[in-house]
Image: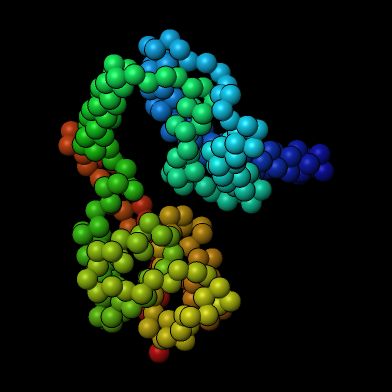
Length: 275
């Protein structure tokens, strides 16, 4: 590869990395806009029906306005900026509580008068929106094949216990670690309640008995095969360097009410008791 080709390759990698870094915070902020859209829509319906909406509220001084805008906009904006700076993933639902003052801000900056007739209309509109929303959610729950919603925890936990028993000669499954989507299911639904290794490094979790983890063994999960060895090394920090880690794959499927099937893969490693 020529020097120019290497430069072009590096430029492409930098561009891809930059786009990935931008995607999560932009999506987070877009999710907040979509979340407040129904509130704004209802308010506009009421305002245009009354035909008395106006911009500005003389009863508010500058400090009041600054305070309202700060508590309504700054938290979600700061969360998005934090994701941009750190490159970490931020989920849209994390901003729900941050936009709770949207209705107050609308009434404060674009006041409209309520009377008995308009209030009755407003209540009816809320019921209509709630009915539509509930209907959509019911239909979605029957048709969706999303891992996060319909994870078959009973059958998968049973399958992983069988895998663990087979590879450890029936040892107790005492520790689990790795991707939260999988270890969460064990902690909530598994009657044996294996201990979850939440953090990776000793200085972050000094409360963990790392010698006992190594002695008892652990079941480690990942969504990506190429990240599994790193996850194992960071979870069982005193695992011998020459220990060979062999990723294994477990496949499961989710089927909705109309027969649509979607398959998922989870990668795991069984670290048998080292005692």
